[in-house]
Length: 367
Image (cartoon, rainbow, N blue to C red; front, side, top):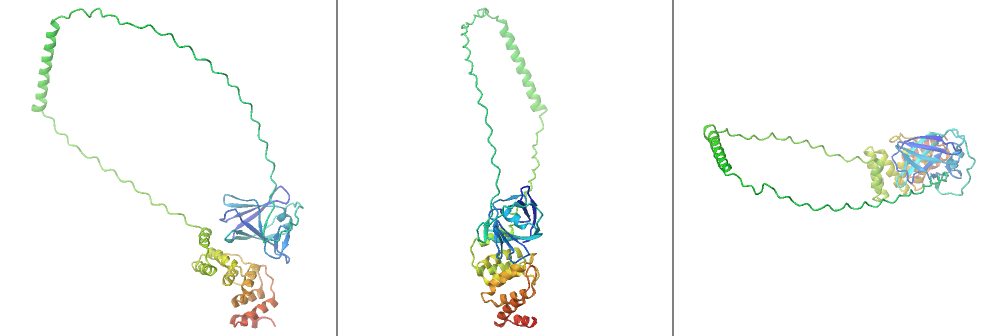
């Protein structure tokens, strides 16, 4: 899928920072492919340029917000000196190519340290950048001496026991006249209380109090249930590929994605089936890169990639792949140089299998 990328030189000669945005992928295991347009050897490896596609695995890849940062060293930067633009592709493990773009390479100082590593695998791990030595840990100050606690104060002396003094009035006899006054006061209180009871209950009884019910409390509205977030294309394809389907099943599923208009998912599943040797899937994958056909889902044309996948299917004897490869070689485009001789050979093989379109294309070739 198309992504955006920029190259920023670092202060250290031969080092740069590649920033890739609009790419939803985890940084672990990501590899990159760098391709130039000049010369027969167009693919960059850590030991120079090769004819076949090579994948580079930087040791330092991290995500900062929405941007993936790749640290590039002299193996790449020194060999790209003087090149204006390169084609960049990003591959994710178990899925395939998830991003491609063309990026301008800036002018920068070279280190002169790039050399052959002797590796000829299709995936090359790049050397890690040397990090500065860790700073020494600061020495801790000596522990403070804690003064001993003072001894507790001695307990106070016991207080002398107190003895209650005898009330001098306890033996004084009370007067007999106080009892009569108390009886009279009780009789007056009883009379006043009886009169108040008769007045309130018989002459002026209180009105009954009617209890009213409180107003009903309104029921709060329940918030709508939260909807689960939609899955990304990469997550959907990864869950499907985790079931380990057969190449024919992947071919059918990818065509269903394409009919539904999900070209990104169709591309990822076609790629997986093509890498497992399915010829029909290899033709479908090549059509995404073919400059002689309309673009699919915004994928950029790449004549070299299209010819490579068409040729893999053509070698199995598939007439459709032979015809499409012959038509592509006859016209060229998108980084692929036209080759009329090879185009004629492939069109003749497809015509030998009674492919009408191949026979018609042969008649149109220059004699």
